[in-house]
Amino acid sequence: MHNRGRRRGLQRFAFAKSMRHISGAVTRIVIIGAGFSGSLTALHLLRARGGANLEVVLIEQRASVARGLAYQCWDDNLLLNVPAGNMSALADDPGHFLSYCRTVDPAFGPGSFVSRRIYGDYLEASLAEAVRNTPGRLVAVQDIALALEPGAPDAAWRVQLASGAHLDAEEVVLALGHFPPLPPASIPAAALGACYINDPWDFVALDLLPHDLPVLILGSGHTAIDALFRLTSASNQRKVILLSRRGLTPQGHRFAPTPPLRTGFPEHLARHVPGVRTYLRAVRERAALRMREGGDWRDAINELRAHTPQIWASWPDAERRRFLRHAVAFWDIHRHRLAPSAFQRFEQLQRSGKVRVIAGRVISCAREGSRLEVQYRPRGQAGPESLQVGAIVNCSGPNYDLTRLDLPLVRQMLADGLLLQDPLKLGLEVGANYEVLDARGRAQAHCHYVGPMLKAGLWEAIAAPELRGHTQRLADILLDSLAPQPAPSVPSAPGA
Image (cartoon, rainbow, N blue to C red; front, side, top):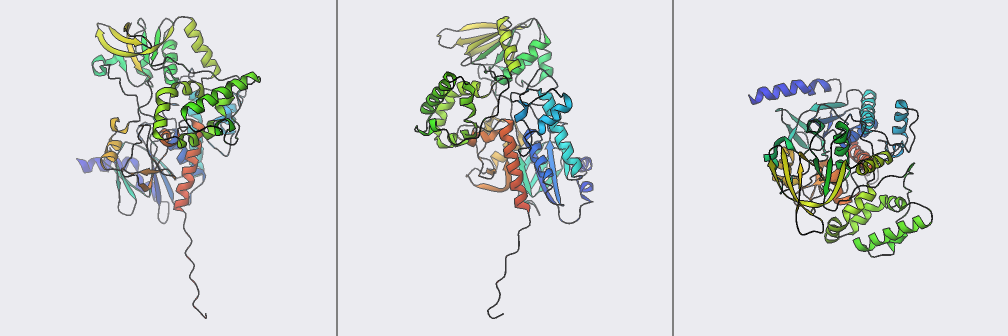
């Protein structure tokens, strides 16, 4: 039975057939995950052409590649939170995405906030163009990577697939993206059935929720706003409650925003000893000064963007924990802003009474017939209050605690000591060239990671403009490592 499954897998993927036209040794780079980061890494490898004997294999569970979690939706109500002028997939061609947008609508400009659906189309089209220009170099495999084993015969790694097939590779890239949030301990998720949705991107499940009862959304960030827009689009009468620890919601972009200027390390921070309190005080003062001079507070945030990794690296774990405990919610709502039209829509929903934002924590939840009775403690109050809702949607943020991920590959790599979780459970520990560190902190040759879990070491690593740069750099590193090395010169014999 196992061998039959393996044969079916090999026939479906047709690996051998895909390589027959290539002469000589083949260098195979396997990328596990074909969302934004994985597909862009493949795109950069193909654009560089990488030599005549390079094969790039994308392994993805879903039927489509390139769109990823954020761009797989077909709902044009959901907009990018970065203007089109700063969303090119190619760092060396800043206008690449804008040019594509103008083939959709010539009215789009660099300051336009377009739908995520259009951006997903763009990513697909960009990868497809790279494939056309380098025929036979990309193989897309719809499957699940179950295990990664070092020391395969004639290769650095062997990837075991759920179909029973395996792939040997000279280089492996883990392009694991975002993972669903963890259910709060106070909510018996299994007992609530369809009334509890732990995947906020499951729009089919959202659309099936009853319209006559309020929906409680856990969280009040960007994903919560996306879920809110989907829910209120499906029903004009629906009421929605956003509940988060501080009750903070994202600010909006200004109209016609400009890209952040590339400058040296900000002088107003350099004057202070690195730390959460000193830096946040300096940023607030800088924002106030900008506004007194007729500018915008957003400039004080934007000018930090290129320097955030340096700031994060300068803080010890204790200081990072202080930031996560006390300041991250305030930072996020100012750093990650909504498109102007999305911000206005959210404000209008609040004014209409259809949306209510609460600061507090859920204490308990029980099913009462067709309703859920939710007990919560409002922030700053000792006594609990209750809500009656029809469903709960968890938008509390992705889970990056590797020990709590229901992902076979991650479980296997942890068990075999091939992964190292960072102390704050923000992602993976990687080396200077994106090498995955093992449990002892040693960089593993020919195994790399790229994606939002770079946040562990860089903090500013989850947005498209930053990930674009990381995927480009990783592709360059991979190609450099595969390039033929010149033979060492042999010194002439004396007297020759």
